[in-house]
Image 1 (cartoon, rainbow, N blue to C red):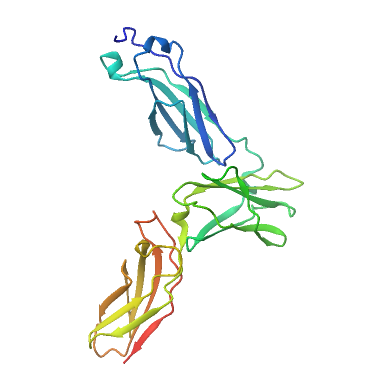
Image 2: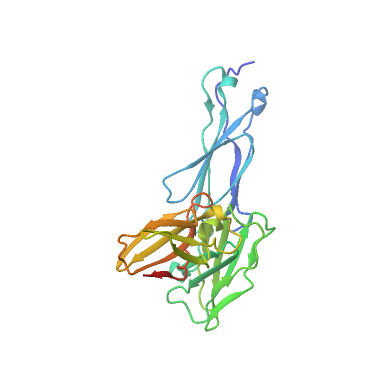
Length: 309
């Protein structure tokens, strides 16, 4: 039984719902009216959504009646959805309904100048998350800030319970040990309060594996293989990061010339520029490589190791 009437209604009651997870929103809808006409058919929905100001719509095709994703709550959210009748239902091309549209934003409070500045978060050695920030511009002296965080796996947003303070004002947070928080969106909101003015909250989303700063290798050695070749070796940095996840930057100084190279091994053989050189020194630093994260932060440099002729 193919459908004769080639029109279908848009989904009903399309809305964007904020369950309070600092940016993880639910887009939900109900089936269109008069769907009984299409009993033999699996109706699909095409959903498009984005933050205000973004040029690119994300597009999802689903048979469900909801979809969840993370959004930047510093900006509003817009979404639109229509019903699709696939080709196998209509014997011809896909039939689409009109769009149904929805928007969402958190009502702005306080001036934008009252937001915190220079938020910086580092996941030290893939173990220990620390975030710091500076107060907003021209905020009253009694302003204080609070940090809340959430990721999939927590029942509800948690407040920081170990603040770093300067002159009694919260300017950073040491997070507790987090249970499997990586490779998923991590949401943070820093809001504030003052007796004399409203303070604008700030929202952040990132993935922890992309902000890891590892330790440097703690053991480095340098041996002369023969008059020309020097073998550089170093230990895999201590901690939970697998050896296969590292890339290293090696800085070699021979007398007064310096060269830099990168490797994923934890040793390197270099040829001296001259067998008359008096001194060869090297330092090494580490970072999580592209096989384990999208980006990372370089460690500090190791101790310097030198050979002197």
